Image (tube, rainbow, N blue to C red):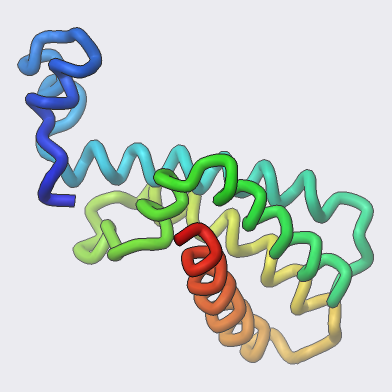
Length: 140
């Protein structure tokens, strides 16, 4: 993340570097906005993949395939989203909300199996972490 410069991005986009700072006070803010957009797009893809699927295993498989297809189509964005946590200090609540919205799709899949709600949260976290790892390996 440190290798991205707002000045360089502004130059590449053909705008004055001061214009970028009006929207993003620092690199981390820009990365958070990009990651938030990515999670929103991923959630749309996941909803499309899981629509009409039975809760439980069919929904989880469809969601996993949907996340892979999103990552395949947007590998750099996926690597940002699945990489080092951007929102460590909680400065970007919209990023957190977008991430949780996407992960909720997997939680619904686990809830459809009938497991206890407290286990659903844990299983979702482990499943998505493993899925991100596998997808990252495939993309590399």
